[in-house]
Length: 94
Image 1: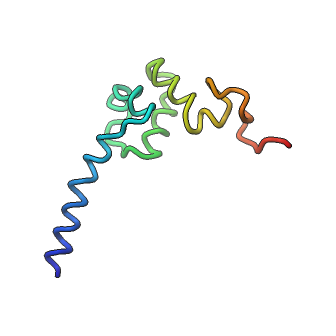
Image 2: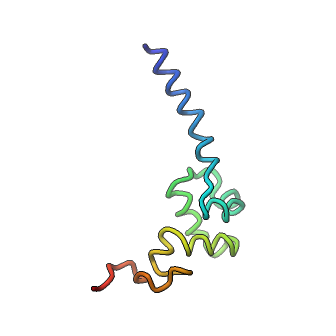
């Protein structure tokens, strides 16, 4: 029983890095080099995006565009999603 648990944990540990390495969304694709340069070692979760946002003035134009037109950037009315929500993060007025 104990051995089965150890093997299961080992399998998860080996699978986790490969799952993170296969991220293919617009930000992961456009920001691949920027992630390696500015956010190496960050897990491909919200931490990576936060790192890219914190370094937005340094990232490539393609990466900056991806950040502004997807996820939080799109909801905040930046980039192509402009006008779809308040830039200050408050709830839209009805």
